[in-house]
Length: 432
Image (cartoon, rainbow, N blue to C red; front, side):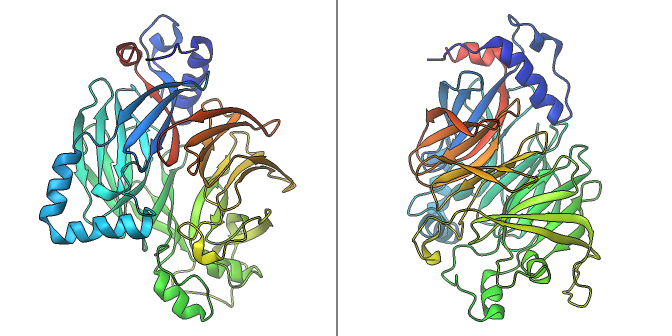
């Protein structure tokens, strides 16, 4: 049963969501009685193969939709292909903690009628018709696993990381037709468009599922983990404009022995500074993409002349687990920055907290969220941070200003990605 959506906040929230992505809200969306799209929260329940839809204003669950309506067909294809079956089982054993990964990333079209979902174990991305629950299109990966996505500010282009093909595909969101691609390192991960859509901040995290988690001999460690890059891509030709090895950049800044794998990132409003989490590190890093290189005498192939680590900030390390037991090398996995650019929200995956951090001073306030928080993102207006807590199957809503929990939402099995999106008004009515 669908709960009532608070219309006053919905109109404001919709304007914020669409303004942030460069779109214009339909005139009808400002009318409380109209059937324009409404702002919601989508929560991807990875192990369950569902997405929970939540009212962005009241934080009440609205409905749950299946992200794998074609499961029987996909499994028949996998079983018939030994190579696909081998990777399906490997993903389950090495990445999914013994479970298949059915729901990773999600984005809606601006009209609130389609939901794109990347499905790692099925190695594809699909568009689900929110009115019918049926698949509108499906795009299979060239490799054997899909991962993070990204959507352009105008809502027309969709990026999806192809984990084992070491590339990112660009698709037409409406049709699923491929329009381009760009190269990445091993295990392409997150994709973030700039506000004008001209560039993409992208990172590849390497083979985070390997057991070689201690850099006793640095070269062997790096070789086994694969290529781990942080890069900026021009969208007009999908060319790599700049590419950094963050481990080497950290070493140049006086922090040797840290991992190169950039996990979640948060791009500041000026798009010059990027805030990063890296494997095994309990904290965050500030990277200035325009600063002169910190050490011109120490270089690596393709190192840009600009780009330098300007701060490395520790957060409390509370786990007593050895790093070999970190979830896919993630000490912390989830980082957001509020629209004003003043406050960070970090998910302390192995430490059981979310940290609300003053960007200027680095001072933090901890919010106890529960076991294995795995993602953080801004709410639709920007005054909230939404944190998925995969170990307890909840999403925690935190107020940026007070660093207090204001809601705890029960969702499905192993929530990971949380995204702000929109749903068409008539679709919401049909869900009642």
